[in-house]
Length: 305
Image (cartoon, rainbow, N blue to C red; front, side, top):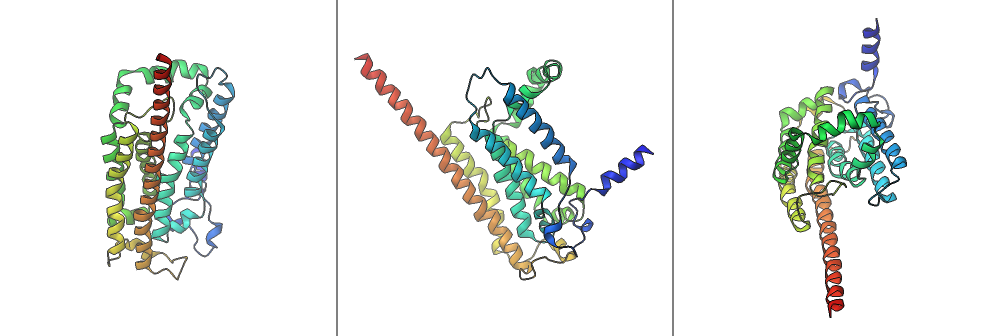
């Protein structure tokens, strides 16, 4: 009896699969309730706030802007998959590309800028940290797997392989009709986005292995394959994602060819704009650090004389 009730509750939640939505309703009325993202958000946020409150013996600063970034990132992630954006993404390719960019290029980096590792770990119950988290993090197997996964070359290849594979038309069309595949797609995007941005952002106490100039080069090289795919979609005269033909478009003024062109522009120009902005910020931080190091050197030089 309990299993039957649980099954009904789970399948009563609005899902990602486009076939589950009633398209006769106004598009702005379609909101999701996906426990697979709401539960992690609730749990991690609870531990994040609990850890910040109990982190009194701080060896480094955790300014308010980091907390704002953390919640801003989660807000973007939730907006991308829980709001009517998800419904529109099932009927327009360009909206789907906006959704993906929100997940990969906006939500994840903002969350990492919130430096959640220390607050969340400090917010965990002490017994859990002692008996479970600490032994796992200190184990040789975990450190080896972490070092492999976070290697820049691995992260760069992973993010491009995942993005390109999911844009193969046959697989992409399955996303529109299968809620599980759609969810798996989003999870895979978040994982590789975390690997990518971790190498650019220093989510204290963790640090990237690359210096600032290398991070800018890493951003440029890693973004190139995605920009090529976007440019290909912009200039192609063939509409590849035929799964959308099964659904009534919300914006009737956008035909399928224009839809694909706009989606390609978002993948190409939109993502490129974010990459260039990130590269500019990296160079600015590098120059600031160089200036401070030079000032320290000159001061020490004057004092030595």
